[in-house]
Amino acid sequence: MAVRPGSASGLVADLVRSAEVGSHDVVFTHDRPAALRDGRADVALLCVGTDDLTGLRTAALTEEAPYALVPRDHPLARRTVVTVAELAQDAHFDPECPTVGLDEIVDRVVLGRLVTVVGSGAVERIPTEVAAVPVSDLPPTRLALAWPEGASRPAVTAFVRSARAAAARRALDAKDMGAVAVQG
Image 1 (cartoon, rainbow, N blue to C red):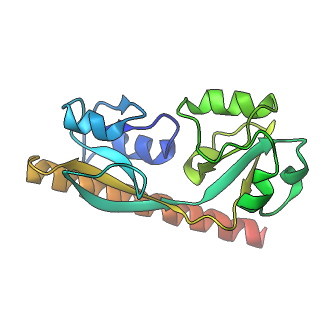
Image 2 (cartoon, rainbow, N blue to C red; image 1 turned 90 degrees about the vertical axis):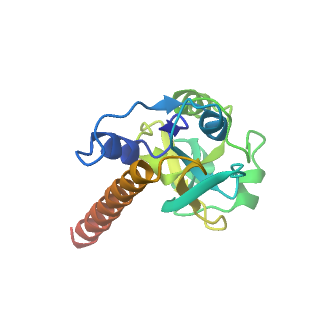
């Protein structure tokens, strides 16, 4: 399975550990469609609307809410939500998340050299030196599993079924945690 470093890491871990799917290698790459096309991966976790899906079949999996990453002492860090226009006022704002690993993105943010937007799947890995603030005027990123059109259907079907079950469990867990936080 091909995944971008730092994307949906909890979901990917749940899927790889799933007894229904068994042991699978994970290919960490910024060009997941290429990993499918050149045979390095049989399936990939892709972003619908931004990744090139030409010649690939897909199955919707989940959505990730957009979050701005800013240094903890940044004026926007204390906000409950921000807009892209507010982020764009910062000279270090990059509307395209850099094609580097999450650790480097976080380091750049901590150093005050980057403000960017990531999906909610990365937020659980953000250290206290960085604030993750929801971005109110960006749509969620739609994640899908993709595979080449000629791939073995039974294997892909089993993988997709397991991935959807793992995504549903994570969504339920997140909803339950939200309910506990509201009650507590």
